[in-house]
Length: 85
Image (cartoon, rainbow, N blue to C red; front, side):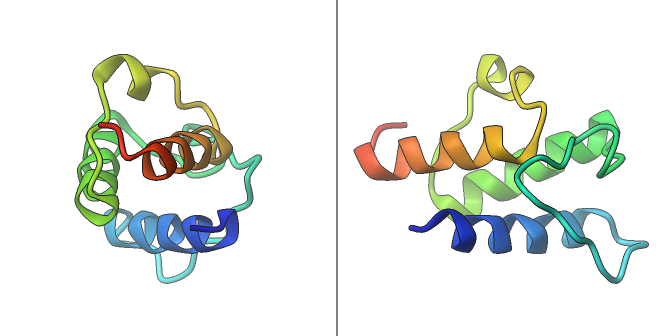
């Protein structure tokens, strides 16, 4: 899956989680806390949606390392390429 396709799917996930938003613009450098304004509950919801949509598992340790959208894209690409969980 291309980085652009993953980014588009993540944008849809962020829109689903941020219910009050009707549009979200993201790029790979978008910061989860500052730019997307995700609180701790929304981060958990985003991780759940990522696991469901991409059929992967994300450990707590991996999740703590997510600072920007690119960190999530890198992890998804790594897990979907190698087929590992």
